[in-house]
Image (cartoon, rainbow, N blue to C red; front, side, top):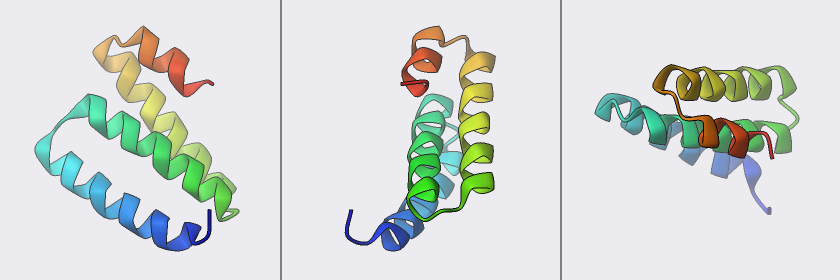
Length: 72
């Protein structure tokens, strides 16, 4: 990844749009992307927070396969 900081900025913008749409499955997917990008930019506590939020959303909506996918 050449510009993870720029990718993170774009992912955070996309996350806000998805939150406005109240699309929980896609919010979890985007939070997972944000977590990966935060790892790439060495923002580990923030990465953990985003990953946990994604898992909590998937737990709330009962998406066990989504939860398993985030663990990979």
